[in-house]
Image (cartoon, rainbow, N blue to C red; front, side):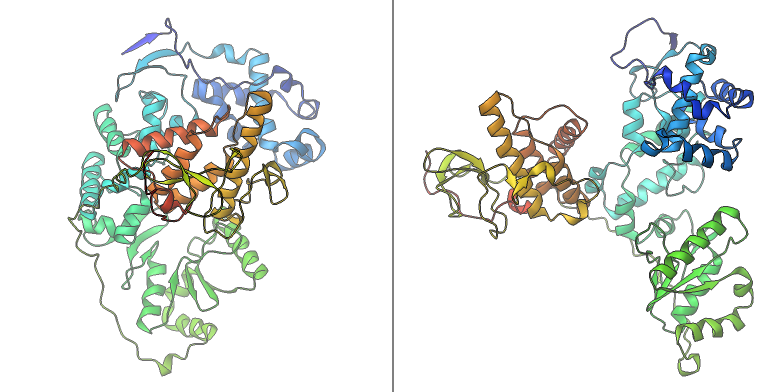
Amino acid sequence: MITTVNESFDDPGLQLQVPLEYAQNPHILKWWNREHDDVVRRVIAEHAWYYPWEVLDALTSVIPSATIEKWAAEDPVCSEYKWYGVLMYFAIARARSTGMEDELPEPQVRSCLRCGARFREDGLVGWPYRRLGRPNLKYCRKCCEECFFENDLNDDAYSDADIVDYIVELTNILEAVPPQNIFDQPLGLAGLDDNARTAALELGARRPSIVKVKAAFGSWLHALVAAGVLPDGTQHTSRGIRSIAVDGHACYSLGEKIIDDWLTSYGIVHTKEPGYPDSNYRADFQVGDAFIEFFGLVGNADYDAKIHTKRSLAQQHGIRLIEIYPKDVTAWLKTQHKVAEQLGVDLSARTRKAPEFRPPATPSTTKPPSPEGPRAPAAQPGWYTDPTGREKERFWDGRYWGTVVRDGTGYVYSDTPGDGTTPPNRGSDLDGKPSWEHPLQGRESEQTIQFLFRYMDSVENLARVDAETSGIGFIAPAPYWTACQRFRSVRNRPAELAVLDRFAEHPHGAGALPPKLLKRRGELRAAGYHYNPIEAGMIGDYPPPESTQ
């Protein structure tokens, strides 16, 4: 059902807030011309309210790179912000200040095909538009977020057999072999009718994560084979024919498979997809201290640039790089000796053995264990002698010892004993300086979980001082968020919930992180999980108080 906009919404559209004076940037106006205005008009006509997310690509396709480089070097705004953001916001401001946006159609009100909620068709952002396409914007933002983004809590309800069932059901809906990233692909579901698309999205909302699939089967390709949708173990992709090597490795081309099978046949120990240091790039194989790359798409400009980057990374980090090209694979009987020499392997001293293919294991039908139940109550909540010996009293919440203590004068502060190697911190400083002088952004991997707990002590103690002096005291969410991400990555739900519960116990201000933390807390509780500070390493498993109050 579609109507024109004649009703109010709590979230009526997502217009980017762009000051009109951004359109007066003199450094851009020096080279901006009618052709660029025409590009903006064309993007508006094609993409309507979603043109802000498409206009940058359209402009950079017609603006010479030399023009962009010269402008970005001269414009002082580009020294503070990324040039592409400056250009995008200039284009939006110009479209609004010159009346180009007047050509936008009146947004209509739709009913979400999945949940029935009413929403404005200009109320989404760029990523659902790119996944669905304008004609298929028939789902509210909440449903788009639930269906397109992975929910790691789904994993806990999936056995291996359930994953197979999921793949079979998705294959039947798509009527094609589903790629691993089907819910991330631009217009990946656009070719389906409304019923099939809605069914696919519903399935996406409860799908297992890729991490879960790989943990169960080793790769998405193995899972497809186990589900019977790829009985011959091959898959045609834009990069070539994807297949499984005899040692079980998933290979992205026949060239990779030939190399992998050759390494296996001569007993040459190798690993698949090692990472280049300080980058997101991966090689095809690693043998000892050497990386092996099959550059199967050489000749493609973007791919050649990637080859150059990998060479530079290998040289920078002292990695021996063995490069193999399609012509080398064609003459493999000759090439293999050259590769063996580069690896320092004497083929004549080895017995070649063609290994047997190892198919994926039969899926288990055993359901994973349910979330741990709550600890049985012991003594009533209250203050008791601190079992750690760090302070006079520590609060007992009825099931676990907490991180709040009280000294002999009645002074209350946060103290996370953790592994007991650091003394209590009665104040708001952390390692001799205020907590805000310990930025976490960009350095998350350097901080241990015990450091994050002490960081929490610091911000909680500061909030108490602020509350006593000014009546208002808020905790900073950063250490809680970082700790939760750590526990979430290893699927330690009770530990993650212990951190979230701790965050929720204290007043917190505005910002993006508090709602995310509280939302995640609600999701974990709804899934049946229970907090456990012992699992989190906040405190040891000390005996409960001997007597109740």
